[in-house]
Image (cartoon, rainbow, N blue to C red; front, side, top):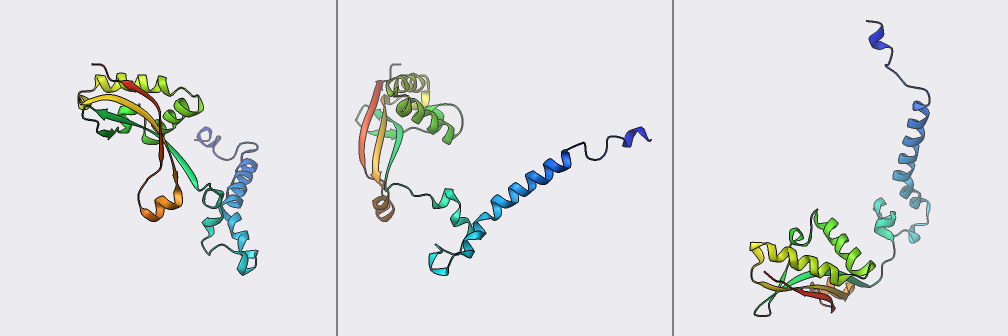
Length: 162
C-alpha cells in the first residue's frame, strides 16, 4: 500500500510553473479592468471585453472577401458550399482559398482543382464553370443597407468538364 502513494503530489518545479501560468492567465483576463482607472470621459464603454484587441483594434472601412461561385449554363451564379471547396470546416476552407488565390497568387490553380471537384460531384451537374472572385466593399454601407454590394473582380475561372 505504501508504494502506491509515492507518486502522488507535486514534482520538482511543477508548483512554480503552475503558479506562474495561473498568474499570467489571470493577469491577461483582468487587464481590461485597468481601463476603469481612466477618467470617465476617456472610457469607450462599460463592457470590459471591449478593450481586448480583438474588439478594439482599428479596422479599415474597406473590406475584401475572396470566394468561389459556380456558373450554370443559363448564366446563373450559385454559391458553393464549403464541402465543394475543400475538406475541413468553413473557416479552414476559406483560409485555404485565400492563401492559394491571394497570398500565393495562384487563383488559376485553385479554380482548376475546384472545377475537377465539382465535375466529380453529382450534386453540381448543372455547373459549367467555376470562378474565384474577390469583392471589395465598404463595411459601413453594408451594415447600414444590410446588403453586401461591392466591386467584384474575377481572379480566375475554369470550365467544369465531365
